[in-house]
Image 1 (cartoon, one colour):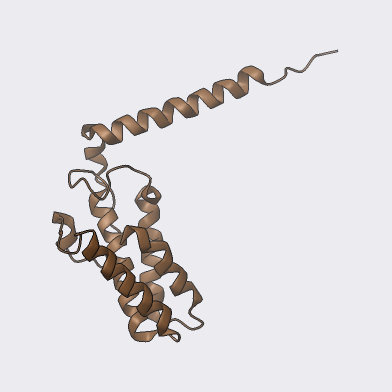
Image 2 (spheres, helix red, strand yellow):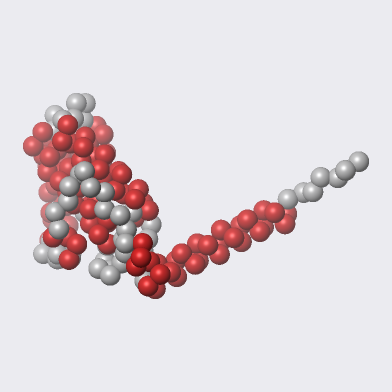
Length: 155
């Protein structure tokens, strides 16, 4: 589902008059995706111990629910059905159709945003490694900017 999240949202954006449930699901996907740091944390989906696993499953479950809603209500159902079929075929081909993660079985409610488990971040080696690299790169860019910045000459 992660591969197709943007395609699902694109189909939802093309709806001239989406119903309230589709709009709610679409807003939830976007909001939940933002809270999960835009899917940038490595291992968020594949690693059940990741502090971001639960929030990742929430936006992917909402994406799937949005696709199913669009299948029932779309003004142009053909591209929606094509995408749903392509997703099903790819999941079967990749043998991920039957994989269920511990966080994948929990129901979600669009009124409840699932936050990352921030307390688990310091204990997750992948998150710590990538956070450290991002911090060092950012610090290096700031250092380069301030070292090379021309100084004004008082005259």
